Image (cartoon, rainbow, N blue to C red):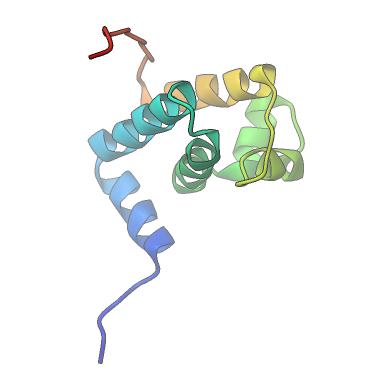
Length: 107
């Protein structure tokens, strides 16, 4: 008998217990966006939203319909920069972090 559980349950539990893990997910999502992998970045943000505040609260905070936010953070979603900025601001507030971007020389 395999001892498994749904990965979403695992992520939700870990985010709730470990703020550093939640911050790392946000960092990873932003890095993925900036480095050309927006599909995975949207999915990471979707999981982070589900594990922290949920789409209903995100909808209230961003003044956007929750179904629209769900679609925007799907694998095929296409959030505008304004929507993405709104989502990131809410997550920064929720996680009590700031996002800093640094460039590094290519090797």
